[in-house]
Length: 275
Image 1 (cartoon, rainbow, N blue to C red):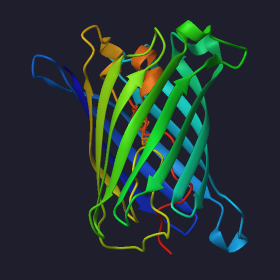
Image 2 (image 1 turned 90 degrees about the vertical axis):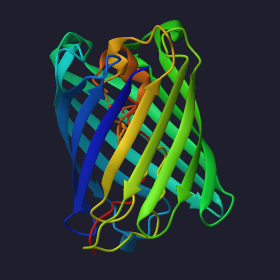
Image 3 (image 1 turned 45 degrees about the vertical axis):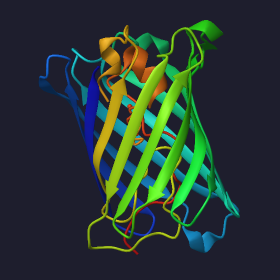
Image 4 (image 1 turned 90 degrees about the horizontal axis):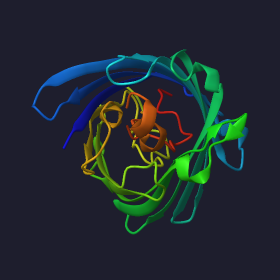
């Protein structure tokens, strides 16, 4: 069993702009703890005063990960975020574009890795949902289905009060190239110094409140033949969250991610920024 420990600090500068910074580390099977890399993630969102029918934001993530954990040392991700709250239902879609800037996959060009979530509020503090992470391949031509990475995560989100949030999910791979089983847990802690946006739910990696810090995102790889690349986490994220699909095969981490091991992926369009 291997696990990833990414830490994210996020600071809101205006009601529509924030910047996050990730530090990725990995716990090895022998118990050693290693630094994997760092990423920076500025994000802008459409202000609520525009009264759009859906929440929309755009995140750019640029970062470095050590060659020991990824065949691509420098990467860039563009993450559009579209979300909608309909009664007790929450829907989110992230049509993510990823690009290797230095490493083995530079020649693949821009790749498409969509994430999505459908969630339902059972109570004011408990919601459940289904998260989807995928890596289809290059825009020049998607990979064959057997070589694509696709995972489904039944998940639960807990609102533990004004300062704490928790997301937990168990992911199942449905293609040959995807890890069969992954467990993720994300804990969010808010600190004084800003205001909380009206909607703080996210697809798969809670980014709660202003001056958010993702204090822990653990990814445990349960498959016996899990490749070492799946250890390095981001997204997520995602935030990488925390971004399990593609990262398992060839990237540092969501991280899924983070957000990225599971890349903290389908994130909320709400920017957790100061008003």
